[in-house]
Image 1 (tube, helix red, strand yellow):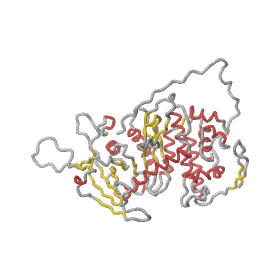
Image 2: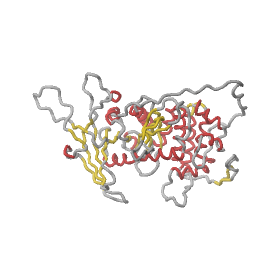
Image 3: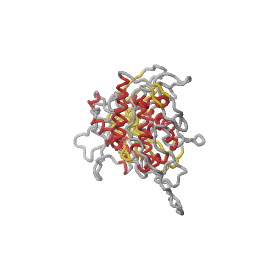
Image 4: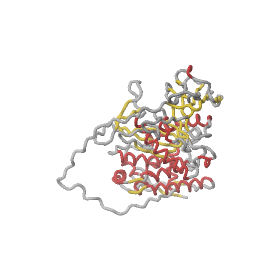
Amino acid sequence: MIWFLPQNLITKAVAVSVSVPHGDLAHQLRRLRRFRRAVYSAFVVWPDVLFEMVDALLCHPGRLESLPYLSLEPVLRRGHGSVYAALDKGRIDAAVLVGVLAEVVARSAGPVFALDCSQWPRPDAPTSPERTLNYDAGKDVGGGGGVVTPGWWFQWLAATGTSGSSWASPVSVERVPAGENHNVVAIGQIEALLQHLRADGVSGAGAGGQVPIVCADGDYSPVYLGGRFTGEQVQIVVRLRKDAVMLADPPPREPGTIGRPRVHGPRMKLSDPGTWHDPDQYLAVPARDGHAAVSVSVWHEMHPRPSESPALREPGYQLGHARPVTRGSVVWVCSADPAYPPMWLFWTGPEGSFDLDRVWRAYLRRYDIEHLFRFLKQYLAWTRPRVHGPEQALRWSQLVAVAYVHLDLGRELVTDQRLPWERGGTPSPLRVKRGFRRLHPQLGTPANPPKPSQPGPGRPPGRTSTPATRHRIIRPAAKT
């Protein structure tokens, strides 16, 4: 089968030979086509331009410098003005899009998800509204670590799986509004994920008895997240500070004791081994494949101190009543390699769902979301466009998430574009993107062709533009 790419300013008309796959690959191709039609249904306003922007981003060779370069790709049959108009006036149904992205990973073995934030820096944009001061770990000044930079704060929920790779498929992306706590936004993202997993029969016993795991970094509140999902079919794993203090349940009350019953038992200070009691469970993982041995210890029926932040009160708390306690398990992961310091985790989940070997391995996969952020920023130009408002930034972020899932679904269909100095093995997202240009002619497009039109009259003679409004930088709300 021969396809011809139309000519534009960069590419000339060339013949590309592709073969229609058979068997499992044909099923994967049909699945990718269904996914594209489902994504198109989530685009409500300006759907054709938004969808073709995704294709142009996937087919663009190299790194995208700015949005107008998308219009040079043959798959985007509109002008560069439509690109900005679609981001400004277009609309994407976020609920439908989350369901489409969640369906891609819904039936994967062992659903494991990572939750983390990343910044869209906009330090030189005083006319852009709702910029907040956010921590930017990518900027190191004098070896003192990251700095705070004005910009927009986005929170991503991605499926990482349990096998080691650089793939992390996005499920949802939300902007953390100015004055809002990212823990509250995380609650909404996890609830939307669980709703779609239940609809697909994946949550709980529908997934072979494996309850989904959501892993969060130490910047999240284990009390707030764990307390909100008590009794739900989901496991929450949050990293603890190395100097945190955990509390056990109090001993049984002796008969005849007067006064209010005790809520907290013995203290366990993580930085003081003298306060630790014997672990309830222990796992020794031997060294293999160049990885050092790991020892994992667990203390069950522990709980952290109640949150002092009014914005992160435990769910169900009423003023004047005893504060509810978020019980869970404290997990200590210690590597024999001194280069890796010990790691403390706090786990909450439904009764009978705790699997020690799965929990600590799932959290190690949380770091795959850092590979996702790096790839989105470097090769899918997530934070490259200089859009004006946060709504446009969110719309572009959703398109970038859709483009990444295209690569995930098409990695078995694309011929591996490995350079001579690159290692073999599972193709990385970058190698799949290099070959996606040849796969695209087999996919088709649900987008409608452009209609004939004429350029507008432009600005009336004598009318001048007014200076844009300047907006102040907003300090973010407390994150813990």
